[in-house]
Length: 111
Image 1 (cartoon, one colour):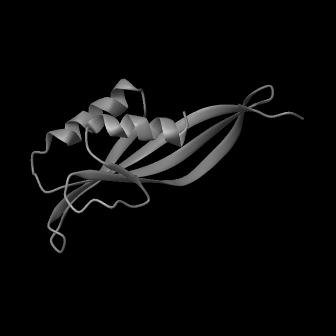
Image 2: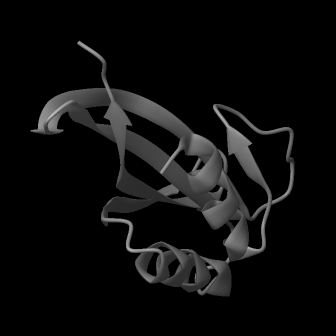
């Protein structure tokens, strides 16, 4: 799976999605960014790349249905994730749920 694939899955929540930032002024929206990758040999000349991605879901609605839609989209696509925190930002007056997502892909490496 690539970052572009993940972007399409995040869009399934039905709200705007931004990579690194957003131009949205109105909630809800999602911002995601990659945090780092690890590489290990899978078999033969195949390397497995695991990329950690952080996705933040912003909303002003305590019971925003797009949060559950996002979780279902990730689960349906067999993408492992944890929700590391959900917090209220009193300055911005938004609720932020932080998702830690791992996407993986295999790449062929020639000797």
